[in-house]
Amino acid sequence: MNRIDRLHAILTHLQSKRLVTAQEIADRFNISLRTVYRDVKALDESGVPVIGEAGSGYTIMEGYRLPPVMFTQEEAAALLLGGKLAAHMTDDSVKKHFETALFKIKAVLRSTDKDQMDILADHIEILRSRVPEEETPSQHLTALQKAIADKRAIFILYYSNYNEQVSERVIEPIGLCHYSANWHLIGWCRLRNGYRDFRVSRIKRLQIKDEQFDIDAHPSLKEYIETMTHESDLQEVVVRFDKDVVKYLGSQKYWHGFVREEEEAGFVRMHFVTSSLNGFGRWLLMYTNTVRVESPASLQTMMQQFCAEMKDHYQ
Image (cartoon, rainbow, N blue to C red):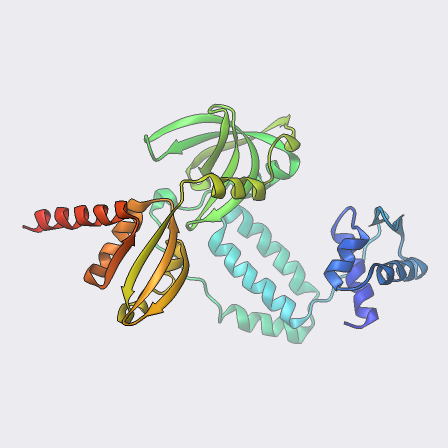
């Protein structure tokens, strides 16, 4: 990247956050701190109102704005792809805002780039999975994002699939997480006096309260996930697959905690980490006599029990 492009990129970065440290700029653009100081000085001398000093951080004077940003063709294509994914993986509340943002982006593109965006839009599609009606995405993602950003407690009516009951909860939300094809709200539940994981599609009603909570009293979402991963009851499983069936595992093995593998004569030994031996064992059943459990012994016993139950069932 030449210096002119870097100066423009640094200015864009400064406008993207309230305060940016010199080290953050240096890390992003792979330059030295001395170069950062020179570049910021050059921006200041060119009329950009940069406020701050080396060692503390920089910000742009409130009210200063760049003229419309010009996107490259590749950047515009990446945003289009993001829009397709947003339509598939979020709800209508987010989809609506993403579509209006995309229209604003297209407004500043060159005519040739607009044509290419229209062509790409007709040639990229995300296929929806067949989700039962009661598990379809809700309309709460935008409200949840606002509550998290404003550090406000929320009131929800939540349907529990476990006991098939609806309960009232007051939650201090710490983050949103997408896994197992669903969005999940992680937050401190005042009813249960502990951190809980709520599937967003099961929130029947949501209201953002006027009350703010102390976000510093909670771990970050990343810290919470790491803690849950370390504290969860994980077990190592070692199984042996015949070589001719390994190709059929595909990405399934990653869903079941695949760690590593070693090839031997005629078979492949695979190592997994799982929190549910029962679920793991039921997955192995589909591979019948082409797989053998080496450890743990408890899973070997479980597989024998499964096979006995199937034999009784079909007799």
